[in-house]
Length: 368
Image (cartoon, rainbow, N blue to C red; front, side, top):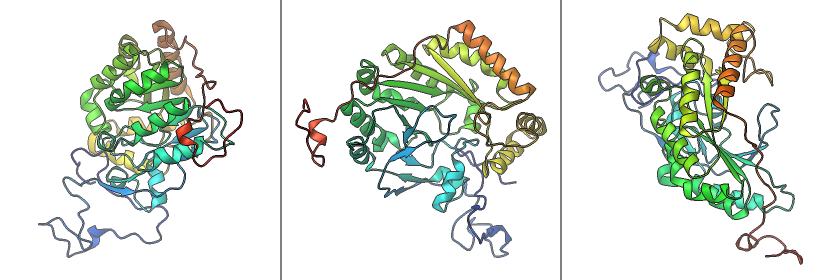
């Protein structure tokens, strides 16, 4: 078991499932225990692994979702990988498609799409585009730490505002409040919804579970600021981890409602592919006394397995414990007055601004 690494959720880089050859430096006898460097010149247990950023040369930026249990068809992810380091993140296995590991690589090897706003504008300008809500982000957090400096998400929001195309956002970062000026303008046309994900109200748990996310009080402050600016805001109590944070749901919902959230949702812990061993190792390092109870509860919700990927059940689970969580959520959201407002955004304001029409044949009857 590897030691904890300050500011990181993972403590190791497990093998990439697509690699035919995996070299574990710990087997080399000439590993330099003094410098911490192996034969590759890298340290598998470095105290403070640095984050590296790589340019992503994708030719398109809009991802099409075909999962029936996800409430959007298109998403834009300005970043691949996420420095937030949430140990349970279901997106970790996607980093393996890039030749990286789902472990520390996911948190420290971040692919950046600096051309995302321009690519988004091009796709919104296509004659075949049907105006509909676009999600920022469907995979990794669009407000992760690098966004403060790079501002790619903000530039994408500016494009969506100019096109008057609806957008939904889900994030764990207080940085979303930086863009209240754009979001409030879009909210005035019923073009936006923001969801703040809060896993726990315990800052100590958050610090090891989601090490580089905003702390719980900062996320509640984000809900407050967004709501006061007239931006429809929801709270996602996600994920629910049995025997770890499930008992917090009533207090978490109450705190979010008092901060101004009007809608709420939840998902249960998912452990697809490489996430399973990473989460199990995390339990060994932080909660060895609860490990068996947590994993047994997960199996109880997943038909005896640690993960099941079937649509419509993967988000909420099955069985007695899953039903208990569902009932708790329903009772407290009803008591607090959540989920009573309409949720549909307005697609009727969509337009293609004149400044974006350089590569598109003009229409004789276009008002612009």
